[in-house]
Amino acid sequence: MRALTVWFFLLSCMFAVDWDDAKLQQNRHLMYMPYENIQNDSLADRGLQKHLERRFGFQAYKANFFLPVCIADRAYPTYDPADSYRQIEAEFQYSFNIDLFSDLLTLNELYGVAMTSFGFWQMYSSSSPFREVNYNPEIYILFPMVNDAVGLKTLKLTYSHVSNGQGDIDRADINTSHCLECGDYWRRSRSRAWNYISSVFEFQYDSFLVDLTLWTTIDVRMFNIKDDNPDIEDYYGWGELGVNYFYGAHQFEIKGRLNPMTGYGAVRAGWSYPFFGRESIYWYVKGFSGYGESLIDYDRYVNKIGFGFSFFR
Image (cartoon, rainbow, N blue to C red; front, side, top):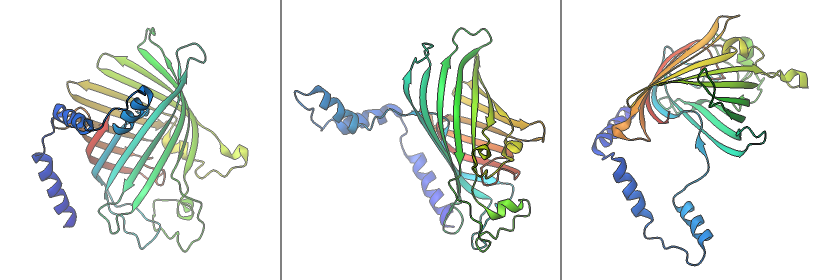
């Protein structure tokens, strides 16, 4: 009942607010007018203005979104019987990067680092715990392919690490999950991680952007490091094919991955549209079906749909 009251209040505010982008920019400019310029020191003045306007060098990398309502086909399993996860939860993702330097190979390439975090928030459950958060730092090299005859625009090479930030917990008294779908290791440890290198080929055909990502995992066991999930490639596959279609102010996306040896994979589809005409907030609907929704349950099949907002698509 409390959640419904909060949503009713938020929806009332949503339709009452003036969402005009031009007015927002004007008011933002007026906010900083009372501050005085630093005289006789242009560098200090530039630093002051950058600080006041909160400008910084990061850029959006992958999609950034918040989906307050996500409904799965069934409730999620838990480790602790005291927890009671529901099939409705919230999802969020923030992703940013920064280009560090360029042209080391005289090919106009860019070198940089990126960080993506993807979280699942049981905000409608008692105490509203975060069920899972995945962290994905990356190092990349991005090459331009402007003269390619087949529509290839960029080639990106990455080294990536993905982890859920949890430890290897072997005490049976706190790992008492009754998830019948999950293996014994799932009940013994919450730690999930994998490392991989990838090649990302991005093509453009008029209103279509096509991304083909091929990856291979790095077997950490060769370095005498314990592998939390040696079969993860069986479920995540060997790569991903994504298509984005732009039609007017609409953007449609579909991504799929598959391991043809095991038959496991996943499909994700989405639609976004400017929020009351804004160019920085979008309505966002996302659907998911398959394995690897998150690291904690990468080997559990999930069907899910979510509704909310995207800030970079």
